[in-house]
Length: 155
Image 1 (tube, rainbow, N blue to C red):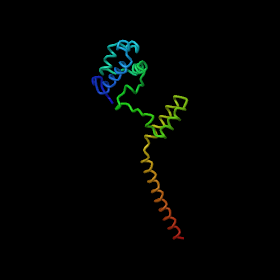
Image 2 (image 1 turned 60 degrees about the vertical axis):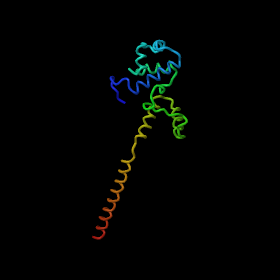
Image 3 (image 1 turned 120 degrees about the horizontal axis):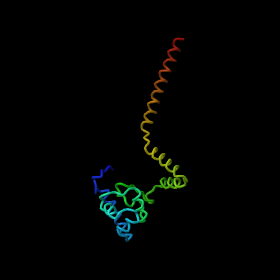
Image 4 (image 1 turned 135 degrees about the horizontal axis):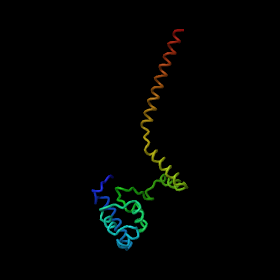
C-alpha cells in the first residue's frame, strides 16, 4: 500500500490509531504518561491516535512493549496476515517446529528465503521446456533412424 503523507488520515492510520488508543485505555494510562514512556511528545501520540501520522518502527515497537501487545495487534486485517495456531495444517506445524530449531537468525532468514523461492516457483515453463526437449529428441531420433535406414539401403 503506497500512501503519500497528504493521504492521512486513511483507513490504515485510523485503524492503527484506534488500536493504540484502545490498548492505552485498557492499560489505564493517559496520553501524557504513555508518551513519556515511549520518549515522544503527547501531541505526537495524539496525532498517531487520530490517524494524522504514523509511528516509526521504533516507536511502534515501544508502544507494543509498553502496552503489552504483539505488533500484529496494531495492524488492520487487510494489512497484516496473522495465522492462528489452530488454522495451521499438520505440514505447516511441522515446518514451524523445524524452523524454531534453527539456532541462528541468519539461517532462519535463509530458510525463509528458500521457502519464498519455492513458493514463487512456477513449474509451467520447466514442464514446457521438458516437453519441447522430448519432442525434439523424438524428432532427432526419427531423423537419425531415417539416415541410418538410407545408408543401409545404399549398401
